[in-house]
Length: 329
Image (cartoon, rainbow, N blue to C red):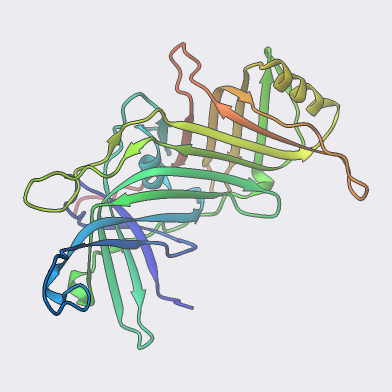
């Protein structure tokens, strides 16, 4: 186990130009992989046994990775800003309120993601991925587990170093607690009336519709910044018991009705919270399922739709303590 491994991201001023510092996240997996392409030249030649060693060019194609972490009640704003199109910030007396929204065009910045992988001898090797742009995300809450946020990235290039002075500094929140299932509440509103739902698992995913292979004949292999090329798709699912209340949601599915969804997370750090609003969702299935050894269960997958009257299809309000400003010396 790599006890001293680390992953973090920092917003870039210019796509592909490394950030100067990194915000640390307590990642759960290391999936950052570089992609290389070999351009091979083969033709008629006497004595040829297989492709010649001097006829293969290696090309940098960037790569992919994802940052999977438990959602903390302090310090998660950078990761959320990567996953959503629009980010606004308001400072109050003691709190900082971040609002993340879906939009027609993505204003999300690119990021530098630094993955530090210690060798078995204890040497830190930092892999610096530049031009990281989010392509997908998933938010999951499940009984007996922390709430998790997983954001997938496409990156332009990667370099590595074991020189301590070249490793970007990492900062972590001084005090943060994980959101968990016991402080997560779901609210569904059908025709203006709240419908209770006994769900043991909830997920919300987003495919951001980004075109990532923007390579051109311009004297270098590095791709240009991904742009939106397809309609984003936001989907989710509830899993829970089939009850008189969830029967109403099944009926909403059969009728093709539009239902509003709200997810509230209460933080343990004073003044912290997360609210997810989807004003228009439509269930896509399925029928309840009876069992011989358990209660009848209900799985309700859904699609998030554009409400069409101005509000964002998905809006996340993330409230954390306002950072303390150090007095000038």
